[in-house]
Image (cartoon, rainbow, N blue to C red; front, side, top):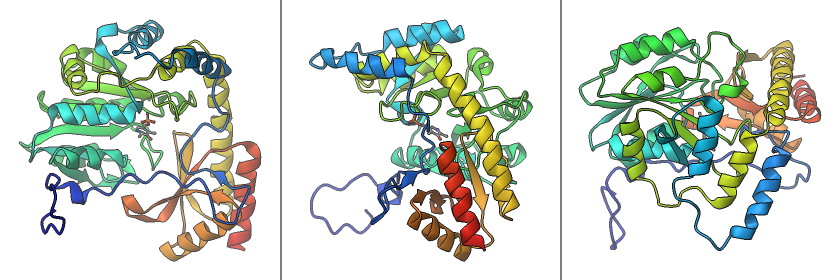
Length: 365
Ligand SMILES: *Cc1c(COP(=O)(O)O)cnc(C)c1O
């Protein structure tokens, strides 16, 4: 934008710095049975109850949805013991991250995150002409001291994904509490708990209690991962009434569609599907970690539905990625995070997980 060639309207300064979000690849040219292990989707699909509700909702396609997703918020409030007016629903939790940015960021503000934080966070900053500030991590895990050292007068928003994507690492609750205690009250701490349901560490908490009691904390959740509703686009946030209302002012009037609302309500009523998804994930995440390590590659211990594996060099990673793709196995390269030796692998169905290990073995020998 600084040296415009285009004669027409000029976008806001700073937008050229945004690298558009690149979703995980889904296909490989010339390979017919490719399996997508690049987007942390649920390999078991979706709750049958949610699917039925979605299909039934087609009868109402000609109608505008209830604008505030009230029935979804009521179902969430009931399930988690929360207040309806402190919940905000969004088109995926990604929209919610952008709503908080839209409500709170002014040009020149700083948005603090870990060095390997979720890819959306810098986008939220840049589109509001704010500055992403990346604190170095330790063992691919957020370092609370490094974060607090980078808080400045301009810090307005802090994003923490716990567990984090793409690294899979999590912070115990004591560390989140310590981070929060070190932040001024005018700084909004967003706890992004997209993978909360997959965590089995007893020291983990998604952040509901803090979002209830602190004036400056919100927690976000998604239906995309354990509920298997990524295409439907539904997420929610919980926090102080004032913060939820501020973010609500910058949302679109009908941001959650009728089928999304119907599917979300049905998904919340189904305890079986998330339980099966979690059990599958726990088993195969451990298996993948062990098998990859047996092959001599390092794996960062993951609390999510994916693992980050480390090749010996960038060159080996590139060759490995190409080899796996030719076998129809699509993993996620992590170039946007400057993690050039690493790849992220989503936990798949048993046969796909076995295919990955067999292919890696062939590649390495
Ligand atoms: C997948 C993911 C999300 C959001 O997903 P939505 O589909 O937009 O709900 C948010 N944060 C993290 C860390 C994620 O990995």
